[in-house]
Image (cartoon, rainbow, N blue to C red; front, top):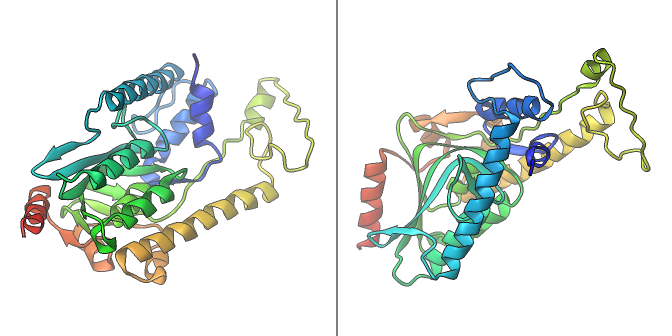
Length: 301
């Protein structure tokens, strides 16, 4: 089964909470979807076969995860009374229980969070984060759930430990925790929204391909790759991005106890280590070992 069109649909003309450094992934997907070869962006080029393999392995992993839950196995790993919840790679709305093929699903994070909160043997939850972000779909519902279940709101103590960085969607998740730790050379932030549109109308014309769009409703299918993007369609997409950014800003301001103006004025920049702390995006700067030690001290009191 060819999953490439579905994968492309998730990337094109869809607002994403993704760090700009991950944009080459989107460009590579464009090339793969439209059969363009010989182009590689920062080594992230994916051909159609690779994208198909990613989708298929993700589907199989989801089936395995469902069987694990059916067999009564714990959905999270645990160490010294702390539930470990990994947030790695590209974040997507659904990818099964555990990170797989470089992606983590919000569905798996949510299941682990709920199970850890309900487990009487678990004293705290720890998100181990190393991600540049991803999907908007289901992101803010998950962030609100993490926020509602942190210690400040009557739940169990919740730490976010950045093994390297948490950008955009990944930072939204981190910000909902009681404490956010980042290493000196790690990064946090990128509170913004990105999307891309591909216009292949000129390429089609050069190759003698004419695509005729037949619409019922003047705005139907306006942001497609077969004709130039009109100003009205561009304004609509920009409006969606701005609306999501507003939600993002309000969420981070609430979670970190800083003003919306402070968050907005960053203009989606990301910050390293001590700069991230100075602006209020993280609580502490230190290694994962130091963060884990502080977490263990907190739950042993």
